Image (tube, rainbow, N blue to C red; front, side, top):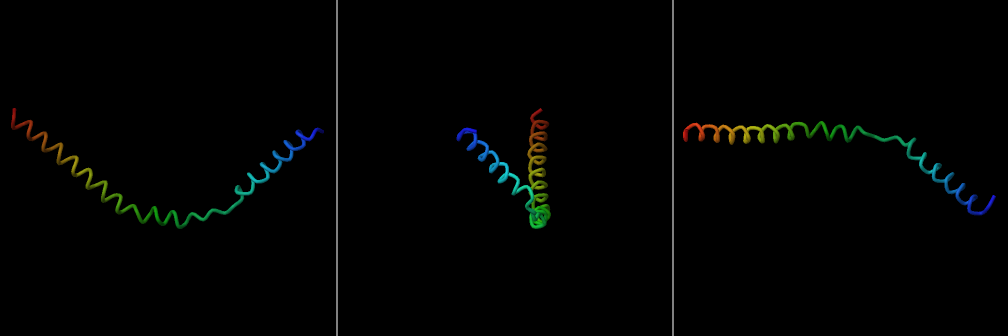
Amino acid sequence: MSMKKLFAAFSAFFALLMASVPAHAVIEVTEVVKEIKDTVTPVSAIGAATLIVIVAVAAYAWVRRAIKG
């Protein structure tokens, strides 16, 4: 086996070895889930306020168009 092929084989082996290490790591997601659940209320409030503004602008334009005739 030539030196290049040996180096390529070892490189591939170590790359696969290092790629499999994070696959078995335990990822703690409880903090992330808690943060997402905590942001539901503010995000809903912002969405509701945005929807109210859009509907108010549309209603104003509709009434203005109706008055102009």
